[in-house]
Amino acid sequence: MSSEPDVKITSEPLHGEHPVVLMGFPGNGLVGSIALQYLVEQLDFDLIGNITSKYFPPVAMMANGVINVPVRIYEKGDIVAIVADIPIHPMICYEVANGIMDWIAPYQPREVIAIAGIVTNEPEKRVFGVATHGEMLERIQEHTVVLPMGSISGIAGSVLTECKIRDIPGFGFLGETVNTPDPRSSAATLAVLNTLYGFDVDIDPLLEQAADIEATMHKLAEEVQRTEPVQKKEYLPMYG
Image 1 (cartoon, rainbow, N blue to C red):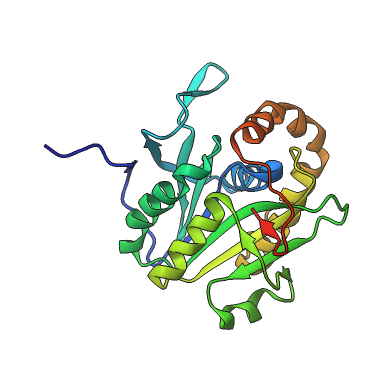
Image 2 (image 1 turned 90 degrees about the vertical axis):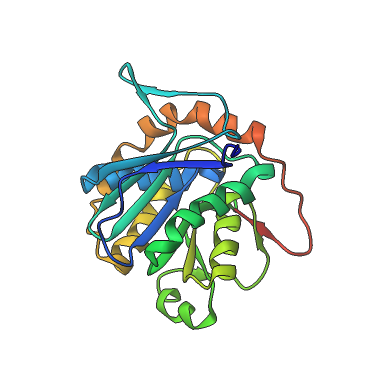
């Protein structure tokens, strides 16, 4: 009798060849979640699947009376976006990242991009970048601040580690944030994606609606802060 998988993915087959896969999970500033949800709405991505796990919090998301699966898979052309509304506890990041990569690897993704936040308490809203291979940095160094050393925590770090192990090209884009719902940091990250992938997403409405988004996402940010460990300052910085 087979046991229940750590991560259960129910999805239509991907239509694009060698897709670019974007991932955004709640974390510092909710940067990844806000950015990718806005992206899929603005560009009319198709909802093609969902991800569940026995390790996820026992919660069902709801909007306007309609239940929404907390982790969703969207697709448009050769772009896939995995968007989450729930935080992933550090104890299960490996299982979740490994399960997602097991599903996506047979499609031979061209690139995997993990979008997250980095707390600096500075106002610039810079976007920091990392890559799984040194030669990939040339592509992003004019558009991001390349991190010199340290570590990336949480699900973004686990995804990038899986990319490195599996020899799948991966980027991490970390929006500078103050660890409250931060649409402005998400907009800065989207501006980088616009440049690198030609999305042409209008970020002005996101900036104009920043106050409303900050209010509606506040409860989710509190949940993230309860489930993620406090990061202590070390000699090597930790990001994520």
